[in-house]
Image (cartoon, rainbow, N blue to C red):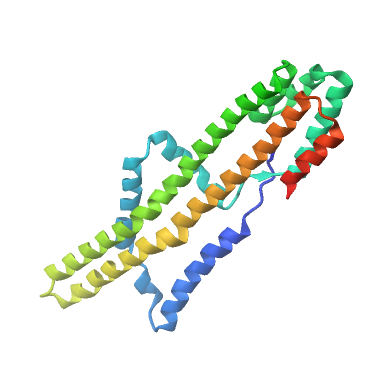
Length: 253
């Protein structure tokens, strides 16, 4: 029952843009040039090294899943809780009129696998506590899987500053090897310092904020599923629709 009508997270776009403008603008105010911050070699060292280090520590399945979650930062999955609450109350009314088997058609038409499983448990006459235990296992598994994705970006945020230092050292080594050639000193020093900026910048402007955003989204989605579980269990217990609605309204705050 997560909404498929996703909307762009404007705050994420504004945040990244503001971060970049702050760095570039500050550089210009200090009399620097934008070209001095653009170093392909430094970017390759930092980004490639960070990606490689993260691949070493992450199983393939989790890594690929994390890549698919990149879009969540800008297109977060939406949940329409008020609409979902109305549907749960409607299910409760159907059960009071037609019995649990009245949800058979509703379950067959439901596209969300989590909700469909819960409805089928109701139709099959499972005990309320059994429904809760089964669905809570689903929630725990889902949350753990999505948290692994967040930790992938958290790992990138941990590695990139260190890789940036490696890039800086490599640039200085290049400088030392070309002391006799003054024309080679400038590019080498630029790579050294820009690599450090890339490493720290990617960590603090992108990877770590992305990780925290994903953790927040997973927490919200988990809370949403807990609302569904409480609703389905209450229906199994034969709770009055009005009482059920009042109970679940707390999830809307």
